Image 1 (cartoon, rainbow, N blue to C red):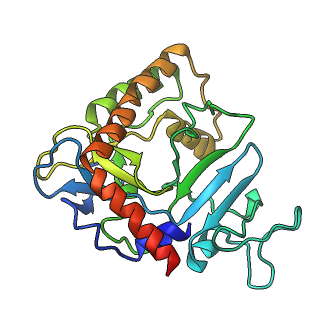
Image 2: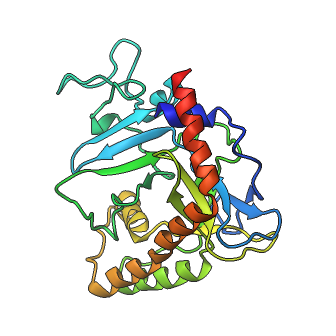
Amino acid sequence: MKRIYILQQGTSLLRKQPVRVGPSSIPGAGSGVFATKNIKAGTIISLYPVHGMGLERFDTNAIVAATEEDHAYFHPLDDDENKGDDDDGEEGGLGDEEVDDDAENVARNHNYLHYLIGSRPLCGFRPADHDATLYIDVNPNKIVQEPWISHLINDGAIVESNTEQGLLDYYRETTKRKNCVHIPFGPAPLMVTVTNCKVKKGEELFTTYGGSYWLDAFLEYDDEEPVDITEAVHLQAKQTAQDLFSSMQNARTTYVNLEADLEKEFSISLLE
């Protein structure tokens, strides 16, 4: 977390990107991200803020915060004299040394939570149910700071019905509208957003949140159990995610020098 905190304070390696924040074209979606000029496929356009990094199990949720401000948001029940929980002796806090594994003491607003590749739930199915899933999260109370605006990129579709057909329709529509993806790049857990097709000036950027994101909303807001996932839905979800891996490979080829410079700058900053 210290590495990402250092980078988010500013770096000469991250120039202004060809995008801006504005009201989304999707009714009720709030802010969105738009192209300020024509953008080629394979272009890094923004970065994903990392104010917290979490480890989620079936019945526990631990998160490490980057700053005291972030800790206060992610652990709202903490106070100055009693940080953390009492069940295992681990205290809540900052950096890599202190965590809080009390699932009841973690902020409920996870609109910007992003599961890391390899830990990502697939339509309600976690590839390692017996183990933990890793994620990064954003403190929405912080001022938006360019180019750290990837969390404001909307999904171009939603799951409108808690059914197999609702999921299939979602994956078809989100795939059609998607023009960028979030991928790991440089020192972990840094994430960047890369265009996966040409984007015209003025167009809104859209990505895919995944069926599990929207199914969780049915459970959280309507107390409705998510539909069972069929083989057809699994296949559609996997096909939708294929461009993640091609985008990762292309970005590391196109931006090989930038990735090396980021690693170098992080290493130098940690020694200062």
